[in-house]
Length: 106
Image (cartoon, rainbow, N blue to C red; front, side, top):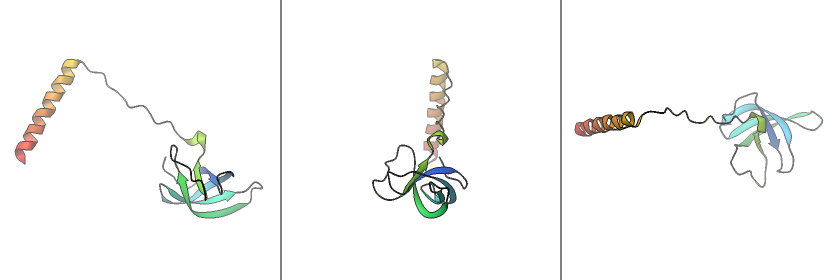
């Protein structure tokens, strides 16, 4: 998921601690600045925080943030279009002819 300003993430100043945070600035898909809320609702800023995406290894040391589990959208399954075997074979032959013509140009 791409980070954008205003999205909520979970901030971990250490791997054992979790705080709510809002993305304040996006450096890249893996580095953000945050407005972090402590347990009393007091906000502090954190800069250049690594954003760990689902499936990536979380750091053993140091701060990082991650997506809130319910925000992670399930990737849609690829759309498959069933076709007859004859149609598939015909498409393969067409592609082979086009490839041959392209090879003849080079």
